[in-house]
Length: 86
Image (cartoon, rainbow, N blue to C red; front, side):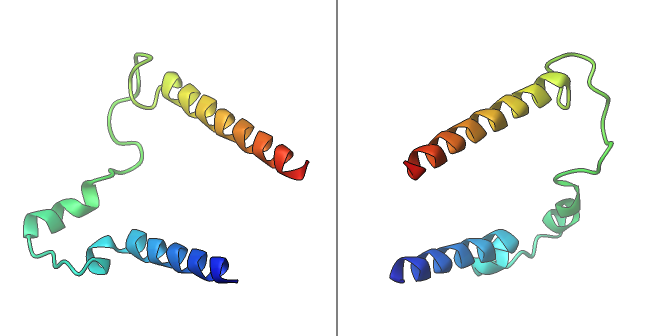
């Protein structure tokens, strides 16, 4: 029971920090330049040039890397789950 409470507390603390890390850590942001740029950090969908070379961001090589990584993590999870049942 204690393990579940500790895990729940850690997940809750992590969620609070991820939702609003500036407020969670007690910092005050007063720099107007930072506040103006905050909405442009990630960018909007469709911004920028289309990928032309395999190494460009958003090209097939980047998506293939994501697929290989996701497949590898999924395979490892499958093997761990299969061993846990035995």
